[in-house]
Image 1: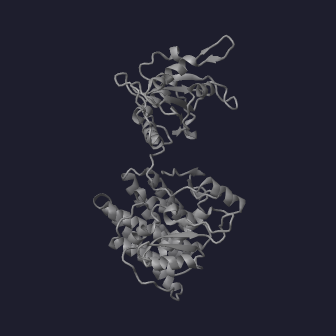
Image 2: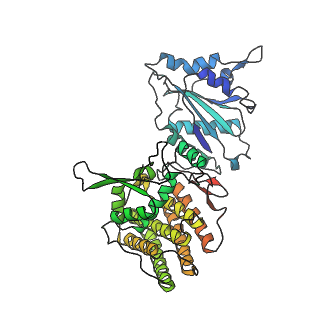
Length: 477
């Protein structure tokens, strides 16, 4: 079940006429009330009556809903709150009665703070049904005592309440509340421009991939900026206003992405992802390590490097299991470092091609992030993982025999299983789903099969992971 909060308005009557009307394509059938605010009386008394001409008269219901607004003290201009609760496709085969819909709506509205009891008169609201798979809720945001309920942060509150309702009524699709670990979605203007120019991704998404790769392979900010420039990224540094030698931030741009005036379109690290600001990257890297040059290596050196990384990945999974309850910060730092290893490995095996391993790395990174872009201080295990990430990056492209690399992929799949268990125990269900999807995709890659259904990114110029035949992973903003 999904709840959608619509735009607020100022015309109760106009909204009621649409909800009880035929709809835009005659899709509204048998419109009727299923629940109203406590103390309003029987539903039959509030149901809009049909006139002699066959039209409904909404004046009485409109007046009742607007009465607290008219009597309130300085009511808001847009006082009409409108939301809808809709079943997911896999739940639409179920026949849900009006009384069940009423119970679900009341439970959601009670948790959000709209529905109250007669002893605590709050807002006036109605829930109406004109289709089998959803109900609409209309409320006026002025309480019976004249105070305004501004309903701030109403969408995340409704999502959380709907998740609890879906669990109580044993519905299949349950969208967990937001966990603030998703990166920023590209603006529709960016998506449209990318399509017009023939780009597979928006510049923001492409830059995020390149920056992630540079972060995973770098041990200091100097090496980080060097790798960005080597990857063909334009870098602009922001310096302190009091000390010109001190760098306080950075912005990146693609050479081919320019404004109408021909200027590069720069994105600051925080506009790519909440954990990509320069202060957070410094904390993530820990003490600076000397910049290394790519050594001349053969097949035996690459195999040995992959075996070392596999041993460290196995130890990291054990470390996450042990530290999950007593030292969550340690487990979090290890998970982020493991995401770096997978990012470097994806580039070593697939190069710049956005193949299945790249897509698995992006989803694994989603599962590994901390809440609100927080960065945990590095630990001995996370530093060891980051050293393996840099080593894999320095080995260069893996061609020919990749058995050792595929063995590392399988070990990372087991680490993703451990991460899923951690996120499930933490009730961070969006990330648990992402970890499960990454583990499935990594096993398919290790088995030599393409994860065409288990984990894909859409072909549109956005980079949203999808799971299970195209279903989007909830972003959890």
